[in-house]
Length: 236
Ligand code: URA
Image (cartoon, rainbow, N blue to C red; front, side):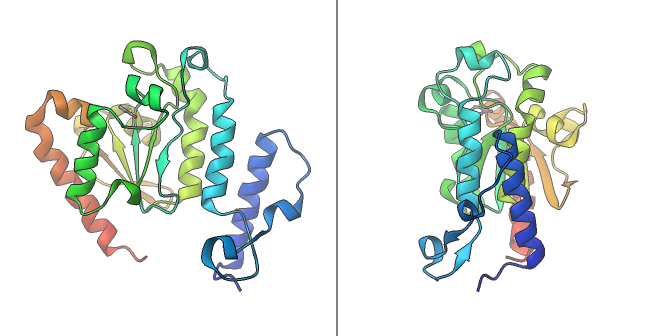
C-alpha cells in the first residue's frame, strides 16, 4: 500500500491530467498512470507517475517549445537538472554559452561557483535541483526580455509544482522578480524569506554577479546559512 494520502493521490492525478491536456491529449488512459512501484522502491502494487517521470514529460514538452524566438537560435533546451525529490531548488536566469552547448544548467564559471555554494551548506549538486527562468539561451547572454520570461514561466512553475521543494533559492533579480512578482531590486529582496504558496523563497545574488563582485560573497553566505538552517528545521 502506498504511503500517500488520498488528497496527495488526487493532486497527482490532477497534475497528470493537466500535463496530458497541455500536450494536446484529451483522453487519459488510466493504465498509463499506473506503474509498478517495484521500479522505484522495490515494493509491489500500482502507483502514480512519479516526480522523475512527470519532469521527463514536462522536459519533452520544453524540447519542442517554440513559444519565443529563442527557439530559433538555441542549440539545446536547458530544462534543468538534479534530484526530482530535492528539498532545495535553485532558479537562475538563463543558460549561457556553455549551458547551451551542453544542455545542462550552470556548467560554466558561474556554475562552478554555484557548486561551491551548494557544498558550503553541506549538500552536493546531486542533492538539489537546478533550473532557470529561461530554458533557452538569449544571444550574447543579454538580459531576458519580459516576453521571453512570460513565455517560459509556466515551465518553471510546473517544475516547482512537481518537485515541491521546501526552499527555492532565487539566483539574481530575474528569478526573484519573476517568482515573487515584484520589481524590487535584488539588493533589497535578498536575505529574507518570502512565501510562494507552501514554499519558502530566498532571493540572493547570482553567482555571475559574485564573480564580478567577490566582496559580496559574504552576503550570499549569510543568505545560504538561513537556507541551511530552515532545511534542518523543517520536517522530512
Ligand atoms: N547563468 C544562469 O543564470 N543560468 C545558467 O544556467 C548559467 C549561468
